[in-house]
Image (tube, rainbow, N blue to C red; front, side):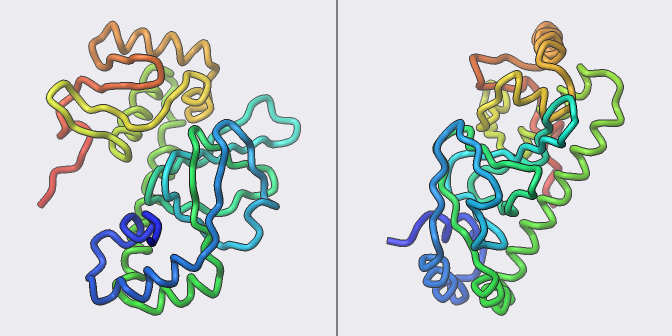
Length: 221
């Protein structure tokens, strides 16, 4: 059986173009990441890009001499992930599986126009998320930084229900602090304020935003 990457990365690709890509991806190496462990560059040497098959991972940058670490990327199922830079590590928030795509395999995938378009769409989506995350640092209010980051996570990993938008991404206070460049204590206070405001409810690391979908997702059409 071919792994879930064939339905994640190739979702929306015409069936006639999928078969060869399925066979190719099925032959690529799988990388298993244990929850809570840090994985460095040497663990990803044989690939130019990875596809997250299952679980959630973050890329953490720790600059020598810096006062704190920063999350530079988050990725859930179907997302593309570059190998970490020398100052970065990859951490699985829960048990995760990646498919490592070699340079040769990527070249063959990109030779199929519908597959190349899908890969480009994923890269464009990732770039848009990076730009939005960087813009968030312009805000001086930590409450607004937290609000905007939660909206961004809801857009990427949210599930709309009758009682709000549930974020299908495990969020701890310390992790959220690394995402927005704040301290854990500041984030805790901001989350309490947002709860009091009626913007969200949370249970452990699970968050539900009490907002209309149009406030998170761009209208279609």
